[in-house]
Amino acid sequence: MNDKPVRVRFAPSPTGPLHIGGVRTALYNYLFARKHGGTFILRIEDTDQNRFVPGAEEYIIEAFNWCGIDFDEGVTKGGDYGPYRQSERKEMYRQYAEQLIQSGHAYYAFDTPEELNRIRKQFEEEKKTFTYDTVQRKQLRNSLTLSEQEVTELLHNDTPYVIRFKMPEERTVVMNDEIRGRVEVNTKVLDDKILFKSDGMPTYHLANIADDHLMKVTHVIRGEEWLPSLPLHVLLYEAFGWEAPVFAHLPLLLKPDGKGKLSKRDGDRLGFPVFPLQWTDPKSGEVSRGYREDGYFPEAFINMLALLGWNPGDEREFFTLEELSEAFSLDKVSKSGARFDQDKAKWFNHHYLVGKNNEELAELFRPVLEEKNIDAGQKDIPYIVGLVKERVNFVSELWEQSCFFFSAPESYDPKTVKKRWKTNSFDQMTELKEVLAQIDDFTSENTEQTVKAWIEKNEYGMGAVMNAFRLLIVGAAKGPHLFDIIAVIGKEETLARIDRGLEILGKKETV
Image 1 (cartoon, helix red, strand yellow):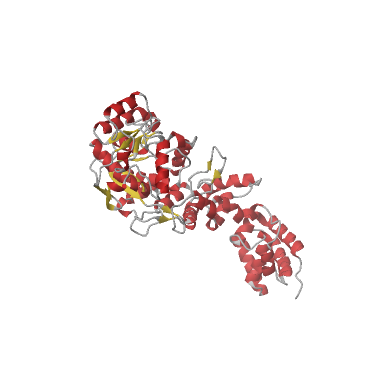
Image 2 (cartoon, helix red, strand yellow):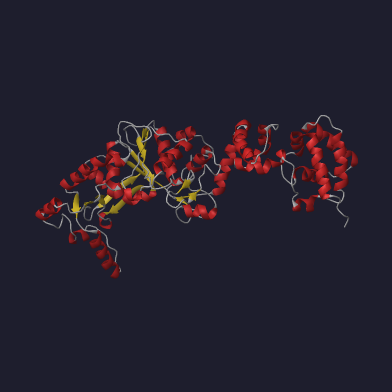
């Protein structure tokens, strides 16, 4: 553990919507910072202008606002180490690239894209793979093979070039990862990555290292996909003479079947979102689903994500952000990929929905009622929501479980009719109507007591009577306690529904 004050960062590229894997990376950085009383930075890495997507940066910021993940420094907060958008730091990167050339750790490469493509094609014809590495660079057009005079002339004539890192020959790079332990890689399998592009912008590798150093980042917690870049980054720190941060590479989020990285295509195919918020592609107009719009609560989303790749070491499954911060540690992060489970995500949302007070849920439910032109002014919405919330995972599902509180059934479920409407149901329901008509105190407790006494007195089957009664009131075999339902809709509406049901279903002929 580094003794310096903890400083971590999340550094997304504004190239589209933020994948939930990215949200999890940000979350783990946030939890680590909070656990150690550190600083959490949001840095936008927009050096690749060709892949820049309008609206993506705003989407990223809105997503974190919804999740409740707060930053201490960055594009939204400012700070002492800005600017926090790489395109605004453009001028400072060239000096670091030039510094590496001066120290012999980098070189100018003047090969044109056409020349490199021709070489790649030759290699392919020989069934080989071309790599700009410690071997091939000796045959190519760069400042390692050209004379000093030729290089000076090319630079003087503004010949396009890139700056590449000069990978050491035949050296084993030994690294430590907080999650994976000791990692060793020989440089003969690595290529000479471009650090500075011909358009005057740094690549991810140079900008990332320079910014992490300048922003005093102590721990780099990022996705497993960056593990292949670790040797280069460690060597860059060494080349600059800078102290490297502590590295930790998080496991991948896997498809539900565990076979490969979770993608948008998997979500489209299996019916779940892979982005925190809905995203509309500015070019194609294609709309991708988001957890917020699908009805997930941010606390459920965060709780679900936290446990994909990390466990607290005990049986707990429900955490607030503060509790997660207290419990989080990198040594409890798994090395292997975490399989996404859609049903578990819904289960988390159900837990948080049920835990909300009925007044809050009622306010969330009101827009659904308004959309259906339901005048619910006379109804106790919090009470109704409280009766049905155990049956749903999302606020949007409350209507399906409570629609009969607001309007009489327009039809009767055929399967329920076939199963529950018996030969004697018509006569029993006619009698029941008369019993209910005599009740003045139409509370749930009183009607239940009265009806049960009538059933027992006449030696009717409790199940048969109640099933037929529910069918007339609800229209199907669903809903909470039936006497709670009729207490809400009232005596007049209850009797009217019985009348209408008797008229439509009629007497069942004796078979």
